[in-house]
Image (cartoon, helix red, strand yellow):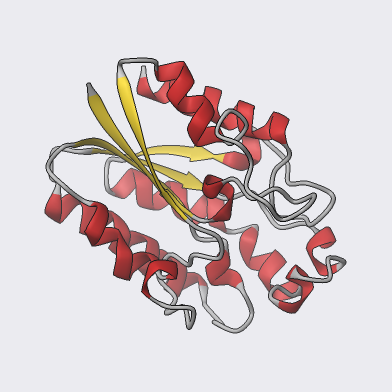
Amino acid sequence: MKNILCFGDSNAFGFNPENGTRYDKNIRWTGILQSLCMDKFHIIEASCNNRTAFADNPAGKIFTGFKILPEFLNNNLNYVILAIGINDLQFQYEVSHQDINNGISSLIKMVKSTLPNTKIILISPTDLTENVLKNPIFSTLFDKSSIEKSKQLAKIYQQIARENNCDFIDLNTIVKPSTIDGLHFEPEEHLKIANEIFKHLN
């Protein structure tokens, strides 16, 4: 059986925008992907809410992608799926386009240097929508500049994937964020994500 590491933030963890809980395994895309893979692949879930990719998250190590990722990398991984980066756009981090490029590239290099034969699937987040500014929680983290920066992520990620010979998925072409918070996904979107990733594994 081949092992797949799913490393990401709240949308890989399965955050439910309706009530802030975690979707059941049969609803979140990582769990659906395991069902689709059956006995061919084993899905390793390694995500958490509010995790950044490269920004130094004050919440600590497990919430800071570049700090915690090495602990999940081992010789038994056949695929690493990186689905992360939207939280770095929180206005407190003040990241530039170059910061994004450098930060995501560093995660790719980290995987490649440790596991040179492991295949990488890089997933760019959906654009933030104006609804994130209307949400009482997330409006304290994201602003209009966050929304504008999010619209550049797919282009940046695609270029990084091309330069590093990684597979690439642009979530904007597959799903839309919930109108509740402009950031997270409804159950039907998780199903679409799982189906798209499954295609890339086959």
